[in-house]
Image 1 (spheres, rainbow, N blue to C red):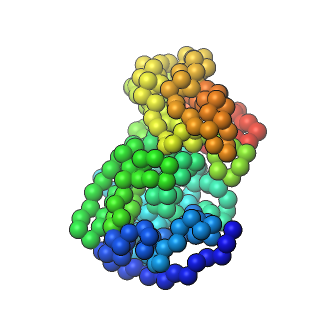
Image 2 (cartoon, one colour):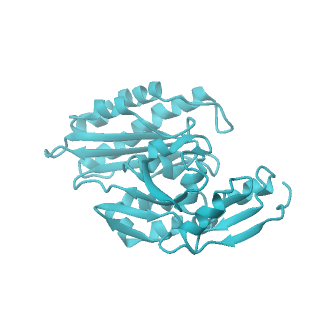
Image 3 (cartoon, rainbow, N blue to C red):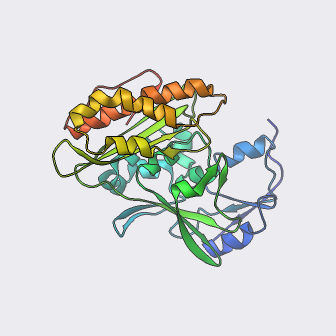
Length: 304
C-alpha cells in the first residue's frame, strides 16, 4: 500500500458549492465526509483525485429528524450518531441496533451513512437493512433535487445512480407500523459481512398473523435485493406456523438469490448460507411477533 498522493481539500459550505466542485468529475474531485472507504482506495492507488470536497460543514447534512412520518437521516450522520439517536431508537430501533455492529468502533465514529451508501460496497450492512424500511435516497445538486428508491439507487458493486454533480444528502426510512416485528442477521469471519438478512413482518390486525412482509438479502450478490416471492409466501401466515415453515422459506430464498464468487466465499457457499440464515432470521422475527425473544445466537453471527 502506497502513501497518499497529493491533493487539495475544499470545505464546502453548501450543497450548491459542493455540487459545482463535484461536477468536475471523479478524476478531478471526489466528495467525502468520514473518508473511511475513500482513504483506503487512495492509499492503494486505485483513485487519485486532485481535490477532495469535504461536506461535513454543509448545514443540515448531519441531522436526524422526522419528516412526514419518515425518519430522515442526514448523509453526514455517523454510525455512532445513528446508534445513539433517541429518535432513531424510538422510531426505528432496529436501525439503531444494527448501527452498533457496523465494522469497528473507529469506522462507527467517523464513517457516515451517506458515505456507506454512496460507496455501494456489496458487503454493506446499511444497504440491506434499509431495504426493509422502504428507504429512499435524497440527492441534490446546484440545479435541483430528486429522490430514488434504494433499489434504484444501488446499481452494481461500487456503482450508483448518483450523477457526478449530485450530493447524497439524506436517506429516508419509513418506520414500521405498530405490532410489526423484525430481525437483522449477519454472518462473517472478516470485518465486512459475508451475508446479511433483514426481515420485517407486518400484522394484518389479528394477533400473530402476517399481513405483509419484507425480506432483504445482501452481500451474497452484486447488490442487496428484496425477495418478492418469499414475501408473498409469508403473507397470511400465522407466526407459529411461520417458525415451522422457516426452513422451506429459507430454501426458496436460496433459489432466488444470484450469488457471486469472491474473497468471502464461493457462490455455492453463499447460496447455502442464504438458506440457513434466512430461515434463522424468520424464526427470530416470528418469535418476536408472538411476543417472545428467541435465543438465536451463532458463532461469527450477529442477531439484532
